[in-house]
Image (cartoon, rainbow, N blue to C red; front, side, top):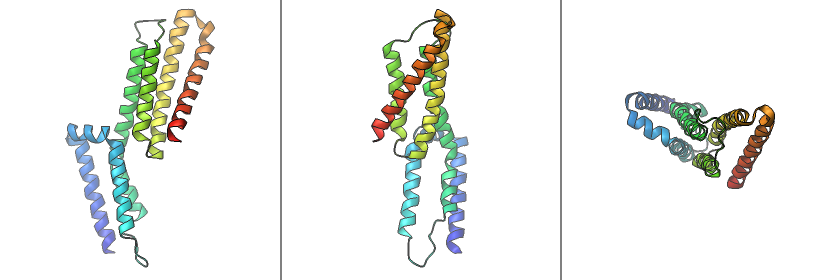
Length: 187
């Protein structure tokens, strides 16, 4: 069918341009990576509008589900980069709070507040898309595991292994607080 061929050509051209933008231009890569939630939302809205505007009884839709998936897959390279950047920001913050050189130091309330604020910002940036929110929450989980490991190491090096299990409980409590914060923001 003619619309299938046209759509296939559009998807191929779009995929090619996205790959080219990712590899050839660091400026465009950075813009699309940092603005991935908006890019994804724009593509979803475009595809929805095309589907809605071409929805005619008795006629096949202009966009098949396969075509939609191909368009979304074309920007997945930016999604992967966005998630890596999210994890990097969170990990850098955790690493700055628990530097390797200062064994046994305890982070201040301000430092912990920075982590909580950063997590909240990461969630708020993607809250309009459920799937992307889950992916970001997965990256936040990795950062919380790093936080727990660093806290356990700091406490163990300061007090010995006696308080080791207490730090695990503290991190679990912190994770539960993050979960309720997220639920409160989304409801």
